[in-house]
Amino acid sequence: MDLKRIVVAGAVAGLLVIVGAWLTWGRQPPQIGGDKEAYVVVEAIFTALSSKSEERLAKSEEQMHALRDAGKLPVPVADYLDGMIKDARAGQWKAATKQMFVFMKAQRRPDA
Image (cartoon, rainbow, N blue to C red; front, side, top):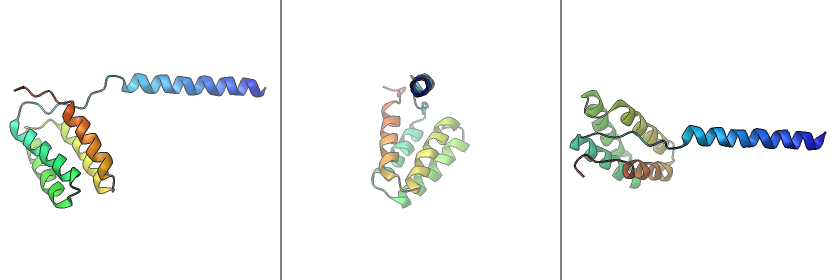
């Protein structure tokens, strides 16, 4: 009976790993788009995160929301960045900075 439980638990764990990999496979962060001002603001957010500057972060966040509201920054990008900002404010500055680095690296600049 114990061997049966172990086999079932192993199968369930394996299935969860497969489903998790399937759900995240190939997912890329959302793309900023072609607005150059948006890139400047995203870089400012990265600087604020890497320097752990709440003041810079607040200013960059405000600029980011203004671009989103003006239609110059896609809403999914703003939501993604808001998640990193929330993490930083929760004390996870290093994790947010790493996530931002991955986000920036995944961008395909239209002028490149």
